[in-house]
Structures are given as C-alpha cells and as structure tokens.
Amino acid sequence: MVIPIILSGGTGARLWPVSRESHPKPFMKLPDGESLLYKTFSRASAIDGVSEILTITNRDYYFKSREEFLGAKKLCSRVSDTYLLEPFGRNTAAAIILGSLGIIHRYGSEALILAMPADHLIEDQNAFTLAVKQALDLARQGKMVTFGVVPCCPDTGFGYIECGEIYDEGGARHVNRFFEKPSIEKAKEYVSSGNHLWNSGIFCFAAGSVLEEFKMHAPDLYLRALACWEASRGENSGAMTEIDPGTFAEVPEDSFDYAVLEKSDDVAVVPATFGWSDVGSWNSMSDLVSPDDEGNRIVGEALLLGVSDTYIRSDNRMVAAIGVDNLLIIDTPDALLVADRNHAQEVKQVVGRLKSMGHECHRLHRTVSRPWGTYTVLEEGQNFKIKRIMVKPGASLSLQMHYHRSEHWVVVSGTARIVNEESTMLVRTNESTYIPSGHRHRLSNPGIKELVMIEVQSGEYLGEDDIVRFDDIYGRS
Picture 1 (tube, one colour):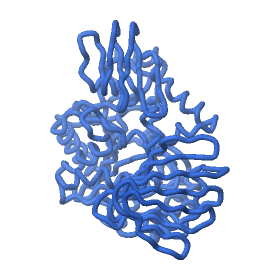
Picture 2 (cartoon, rainbow, N blue to C red):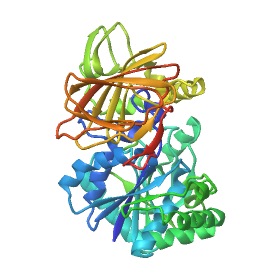
Picture 3 (cartoon, rainbow, N blue to C red):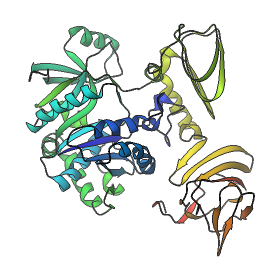
Picture 4 (cartoon, helix red, strand yellow):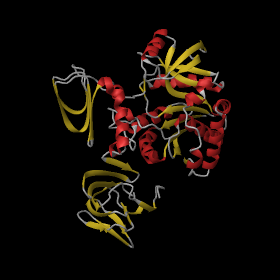
C-alpha cells in the first residue's frame, strides 16, 4: 500500500503577478498548458500500487484542485482523490503528521507514504518511478527517506544535504547533516566538495515510522496534532476531511525537515536524477521555453527590436520591447512586472508591499474562479463595478444578501434561474432583472450550456466581503 500525499500549500510569491493567493503557483499553467498540480497528480498516479492520492491543501482550493484532477483521473481511473483541508497554513510538519494519522486510521501503520510538493516539475517520469521504488524499499526498513538533487551551481535558494555512507547499489546514502539555505560562500564550498546535494523536499516513509519520529523529536507537536486529528475526524464526507481550526491553531508551525529529519539518526537520501526543478522564480520558469537566436524566450505575442536574453509572458496583449537586455516582462490583465533577471528573487518583496498596502492584486486576479464558475471584473469606479459572470451547467451560487450594493443582471447567453426574495423566475438571453440591496437572492444555471451574464453593481461599498450566505451547496455558508 503506497499513498502519495500532495502538499499543496504555498502561494509562490516569486511568481507574481501570475501566482496569487487565490490562484497560487500549483495552479499556474506551464507552456504545455498543464498546471504543476495536474502534473504532480499524474506523476503520483503512475507509481505502482497507488490507488489513492491524498491532497493536503487550504479549504479555499478544494474545488479548484478537484477540477485540476478530473483530466488526470480520466487517464488513470483506478486512482481516487481524497482531501485533507486546512483552514490556514501551519507548514509541512503539521500537514505530514495529520496526513499520516489519517492514513494509519484507514490502512494501518505499515502503509508507505510518498510526500511530494504540488509545485515541483520533474522531467523524467521513468527515472522518478525508479527512484521512488528505491525509496520505498528503504522506507520498508523503517528509514526516513529524502531525495537529493546534484547541484549544478552554488545556489542560496536551496537547503543542502551532507551525504555519508552508501546504503545500496542505487547510490542511496546515509544523511550526515542538513544545512539551511546558505550564504553564497558556503554554497560554493558545498558544491565544490562533491558531497552535498540539494534537498528536493520530497520524502518517503512508513506511516508508523514517521509517527515514532514525531513522538521522539517533536513530542509537543505530536500530541497537539493528535488532538487536532481526533477533533477533525467527524468533519468529513468520505473523501474529504476538514481540519478543526481551533485545535489546528495550537499545532506548532514548523517544517518537517526541522521538526524531524534534522534530528533523526536514520535518514537516507536517494539521488534525484529525474530532472527536478522547484520552478521557484521567473528565471526557472523561463528555462521551460526554448530561446530564439538572441536568447529571448516568449510566451504569447511579442514584437522585439534589438532585444536579448529577455523573458516575456503575456496571455492577452501584444508586448513590444525595444533595445532592452536581460529583463523579465510578465503581463497580466491587471498587473505588469518588469524586472532585471538578476533580481528575480526580489519579486516576493513586491507581494509583501502590495499586501501591506491592502492592494487586491496580491490576492485576486481580474478573473476569479469559484466552485460554480468564474467572474471577471470588466470595469470599476466610484460606486459602481461591472462584472462578467459565467455559471457552469447545473451549478448554483449561494442564497445570499448584500447590505451595501444592488445588482442589475443581464443574461448574455443561456438561461438563468433567479430567486429574488419570495419569487423565482427564469431570465433568458437579452432579458434582465434587478436585485435591490437587502434582498435574499440566488442565481443558478438550469441548462446544459454555460450561463453568461453581465452584472452591474452600484452602492457605497462593493467589496467581495459584503456577502451574507444563508445556504450554499458548496459548504461556504
């Protein structure tokens, strides 16, 4: 029994403005049209013995994750997707111990776990499968296993592993020590030694063994996580378990590496020769695109005059660049990033500034996904906002009310079923209706085609938090 755990947590702030809190890095589409999350699920599905994949993610990403996995499950129908939903992030130690407790509850302590981040890219599936097989053999012996990447250069963005004795013919080695992200001088020293690997953040272990390690090296974290699991077990609907927020807040916020691996005496590292990348910045994202003769890499439409070594990504507009070199140009409908490639790591600081300013573009795109479909902000100004709303066939928004805004709805295509206080009506293409502030209302799509509407909001406050939900089929009320 092998259960992969997909850890889908971080926002990927260095990949702003494409990655945002409501649409984080795992959901970003790569040049081939697939997301990192989709690729991770597909990769895990290909491992022998896998019939279930547990995804640990934020409650807000549940429906988006299910949609991403639909295509992968069509290719591998034998694999089911289950979810452990966090109310907020508490780092990887909390996620791994709660996932392990759930797996033991269903399958016993001998079950083997492969914990893998949702936002990494692996190019060679066959080599990855062979490395996982090697790691599973070591995990059956009770070892904690990590995967180490041979450094191609001194990089300060990764943790390092110091290797010890060789365990097997495949080159697995005992881990002597872990090192946090080093200075450039230390990174050069580690790389030149030939005895250090980058820590990939992929782990393998038996469920029972990892709990024993938590008991030994992080007893307080273990006891609080156990209490959280007991409080959360009733909050599930078979394939989905919601973590109790009160007890989860008491679990110490720590990484799995620091809480367990760095303190354990029985950790092995398997060499990762499968083309691993954490795709952690726009420079690494640009490496996925073939360059032209001048070293430029383009996703979308661009017109270049005298430009070299520049990465441009634009999904909606033509980008013209003249006489520039070594730039990152990332264009989205509501935000534009222009940066020197040598400063790619500093994009995270921009996100921090936007967050402190209270600017919405650190959190939301102009088009926002919801369980029922999407909405796109077309224009907004003083006391008004215009949206395009798309509702999937058979989907329904919550029964809700707004204190501060009224809404005019015009159906562009499809048919809308609308509840407005005590009345229910069908509104068809080219028809409209009006929802005064304070009215309970609900919008649903009874048809088999997408419903598209234009919504005009007017009022003194138009924030997305002016929603009181009375009933919701997606559990948000």
